[in-house]
Length: 84
Image (tube, rainbow, N blue to C red; front, side, top):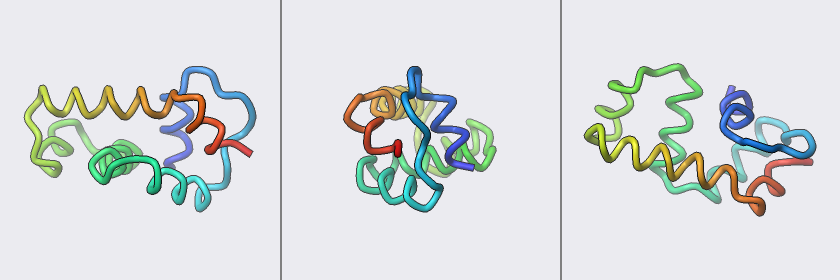
């Protein structure tokens, strides 16, 4: 499920994403705990309000965290680590 979210957020992906288990290891190592929890929540289909509550974030801080996550997923070095 995480693969679909990662594919949706990455703008230009060269190659195929790794298997879910390998992808999880890379993401846990490269993302902050909050960024990873946010990604998992999005992958799980949780509404934005529920994620804000779960992560104890107001709307502004949620947006900042979301933007940082998307930006990080689009860094070339991370994209290389996520692909085979």
